Length: 121
Image 1 (cartoon, rainbow, N blue to C red):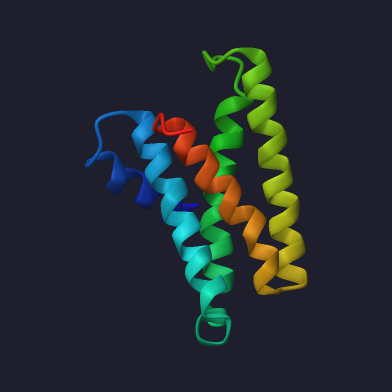
Image 2: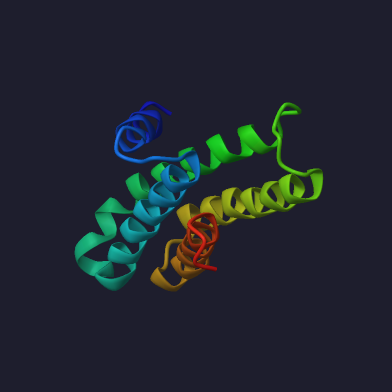
């Protein structure tokens, strides 16, 4: 969890809002996964680290949206939690059966959520 927290702190210093921070971190995770997808043979060794970063990031999101003090509407919190559970399960599946095409859903989810957070969706 240390690396995700460190990345979160580093990016936090560079952004104006928590939404921007979250979007930037999601895009960073998506970019890492995309790089591995695009150069599977050359970047395959980075897969575990990229999946770990993504999983830690989503752990932070899941912890936040399942906190009763979270100000988001309950339905939105539940939707984000459901996506987070999918991401966690799919990440475990990718770890156990790695293939570049299996990264697409993680990349797309991160990019779509980042676009929503930054008002581009």
